[in-house]
Amino acid sequence: MKLFLHVAVLLLFCFSAVFADQFRDIQKISLKKDEQKKILVKYGSFEKIFKFRWTLYHNKGLVVFRSYDRIVAQNILYLRDKNQAFRVELKPKDTSSYEGVYLLVQFKEFDYEKKQATFDISISDKSAQVNLKYLEK
Image (cartoon, rainbow, N blue to C red):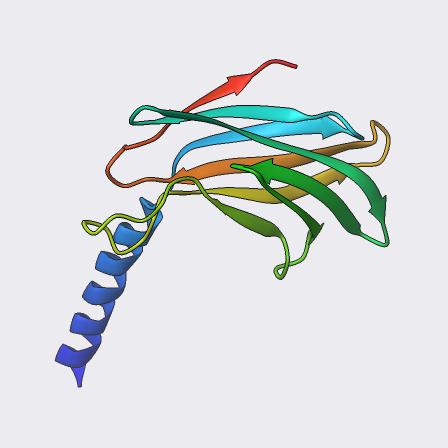
């Protein structure tokens, strides 16, 4: 039984180290209402723009509009565990990787005084295929 616990703890630490390194280039961004953030996504010979903004905060729900690669969507994000983030696939999956390259936008806080929402933007790209450039307005 003691050996089983040692092995279980060892496996837990190994897997937590693998999953902790899933994201790179984590950026914290604060936006006011209808202020748009643009991110240039580069991979291979492709350059695409990811844009998002929030337009309403009501009943602890933040309405976010986003667009990438001719796909437009709307999300309602909350500060609790569920519906706190959305994921954007940045490039098509290739045969060498089980999981594609994606961007994760997570709603972190809302400042009532400044009327400003704060987000964490992270990229999951284990083989560093994609470069991001945060554009000014």
